[in-house]
Length: 434
Image (cartoon, rainbow, N blue to C red; front, side, top):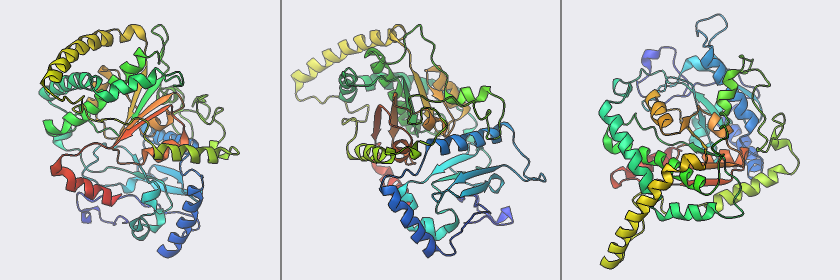
């Protein structure tokens, strides 16, 4: 719904996306838009990617430039503008000063919204906003003031989060799924893994109650548990090797360019990605759409890891004797795993990146202390290459579609989080809105 002229007429918690004011070849009616969209999605199903690495790089540069050099919306030239291509490759102009009001996102910075195939084909996508129905990536902006309870966690909450995180790492390491991962990572056919990228994990410190931040804390503990397994299996970098900086850190070091962050050549070419020279869209390579289509089919048809996805889903016991044996084995495993965890620094090093626009400064400090780096959207996607292990647990964005279009990671760990019974209705409502 387009914003009104008077901001006072807007309800305080309405979710709203700024609509573009300029667009070429605008479909005159929702019916015409629906026909055009169906034709384009037919080509998508034949192997044409919706998302591309070049598209994300260009958007990332524009957003970085806006954040580093903000413009006054009342200036003669207008406020900040982001240009994003739609499915027809027409540039759509997004003026950020129109804003997006939402009760759930208080980051205060522009953030991206990704629309997968299912969301683009949803009838409401065309009927409610035909002008942006062709856009797989959209820009929103949070104008609601930050709530007082979100300004920062208390000292007690930070201490509880640290203890929960520490216990969560040990809980993950004792599960059958983690032991199965260790068996797989020791295989001869497993490619070299040098970094972990997690997309869409919930923020930790912005949860109002203890029960709500325990889950996100344990999901982040999974990153460290998997990193420790990979290091024990010989992946990552040696101790005497310097970890390469993130792409976001590299682009920030350069002078500001016309597309944000640095000059045109500052973004390093990723030799491990489908676009080795960094100058050509990988979707233009002959035969690659077919490869991407096969990779997408493999990614959706069979999960990489089949096992319990909860720290509580440890090995079940059958009788009292087995319980006693399992208790003794668990105690020994705890000691052995503790010794192995302390030896990780001597075995190697590995980058761990997480991406979520809702992370607060407290989240960044907490995660940095445990070896996890927060990168802004969409730099987490740009970090993914064929030496990456990707983690995506119950995200609210089409992570698998995006990853299958822009990269071919070594391992993709994805599953759906278990919701409490009291929240089943909320989960069903969220699914109905996508």
